[in-house]
Image 1 (spheres, one colour):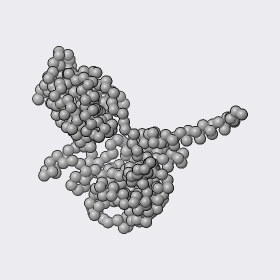
Image 2 (cartoon, helix red, strand yellow):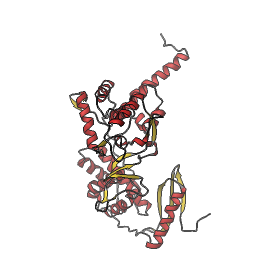
Image 3 (cartoon, helix red, strand yellow):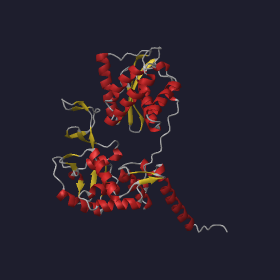
Image 4 (spheres, helix red, strand yellow):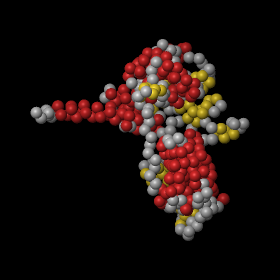
Length: 400
């Protein structure tokens, strides 16, 4: 059924990204003002959002649009909106970018007067305050652009050239796969410890630290020899600690365990997966199930009966590194391996074994990890072998 004029429209911007758009009057310069909201998973969700917006506009009126809206004022409005749909970690990052970099650099500038120079000023501030980290500058830039796009969606005027500034380059991470001799040394030491399965889950199954800390016995099927990786253990920020409420977006799926510790869903649908267990891990988990201290939440790995904190998990990993006497050494400098490098190790071992990248993605719950620069040398070697195989079938020989 067609909607009445002025009540808005719903459309699919791209697969899986439904939007609504509604006319809400005119801008300060006299142009038609349209409010657009995106990122609804289904048409039904977008229609519900549109209906809610129409009710709010009818009850409260349309938010004021002024040509004098400053970056500071808009950032306050935007954060109130953003908290409703952003994951807690994403909101914390955005709020920090606004408070520490964006507002101090250009907070007094009106949205309508923004120039590329203002955007570069934010980048420079982020580089300066972030010890010249382009990763920090890139995150701040991304949040600024998201905030300005939201301003446009609300009908505010933001000059197009403010969006044309080149974003800072992504810093190259020194995280890489743990070399096989060191990985074997870690596993050898781990095999003698009661929590051996924890480190096998990281090194051979590619499970993230938060996935391991959030793993429950109910998610392990010993008959099918699989692990259902559908939850992560995260500490959510309090909205009101006395009231026991937390700052989470609308429709955010979380199960409170104790205090701020919650089981939450992975960031993307690909993160939810069922992975097979290697026989060694099955045996180690069955032994650990008999010996593990009990906890009321059914967690496989806990901290004195309560959900394990990330700092405790990292400390155990550091102790494992030290006992195995392994470290990453480049030139004259060295450091302990990062716990996330265990996942890189899984990816590299699977690639070197000739496993299809699509299968690796299904195991790890992540696609970019198998095409990142860190694995190009592995992928190139696989490609070389594949081409050599084709050449042999064609009976090609090198010219003399």
